[in-house]
Image (cartoon, rainbow, N blue to C red):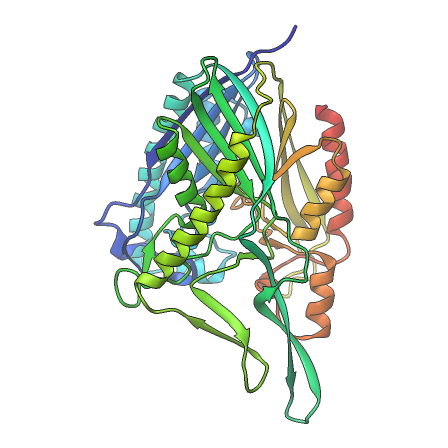
Length: 442
């Protein structure tokens, strides 16, 4: 007997109350000053009549306190934790949450007491909104149809650039750094899922694309020296979609974007015209980053709408199955421990009909995302970075080429000095787990 699809969705604001903003902190301990656009929590609830799954996204850099909050959601709704996709869209212009002892600039235990207290109050606010939004999405579930489509969006670029310079001995050297590497692989695929009721009214959209949500990074839009809060590209595309398709909820998610930035952003990297070494600048004008955001979000929106218009494979029947496995490979100690903990990555597979949502508990590099899609037995496999990423400390999930270049050249890839990952192991583990997991759910 075919299983029928049910869908409900809801969204609510999680913009911090104004009184808390002075004592909240962004990434890299940045102080926050004012709001460019609101932050939202979005939930899509799906059921096949037997199994219910939740897609939960936060307009934050990472989904807050995944272990505690997912436990509470599961207890409250009786939905198994494995059935909950729980991720942040990775905007770099929002308050951080959680204690984060493994992210040194963001370690909440080292911050002033007023920052810790404000963060706890904000987390309590988010938790209250989360439970209300989940309940509302489940309550709204109705018979539905699901369709999907793919397209391309060219607003992303590989960000790992090599810079040629002459050292003090007159010898040419190569260094690694952030930049614009149009020759390196990046996935331009845009994947969109549409959910509508049996009368054809849109209920929800799920949008997936590989790019860091950093168009507005370190912006100075409100107050000198402080970062203005914004949901950046992903959150603004969601908002535009919800304005076009009234009463719908549009969830945006990041694909395998560990080494991918937008083609325009408020922080610029380039070869110094005199030395050739990596140089950078952050734009200080208040209007410029907002103009960059509008251009990128609008272009991306146009690409999304093009895909939506061509979705004509709407189906009422579906089946939901889920699975979580943990990849454990050799790890290195950052503290000189002779017996370091394994490098651990949470892998989360949620199959909804013909679409596989593959949640990765970190920031997967492009080549690894490409490999997953190559070996997946399901054509419509969608990678979601940052799925419950604060549950374990895996950070950037590098490919072996990044380690090789990091060793061979000057400089350092972003985050590598704080990673416990050991090269030469993870790709094989990822392949093995991926094949095992798909074999169990299809």
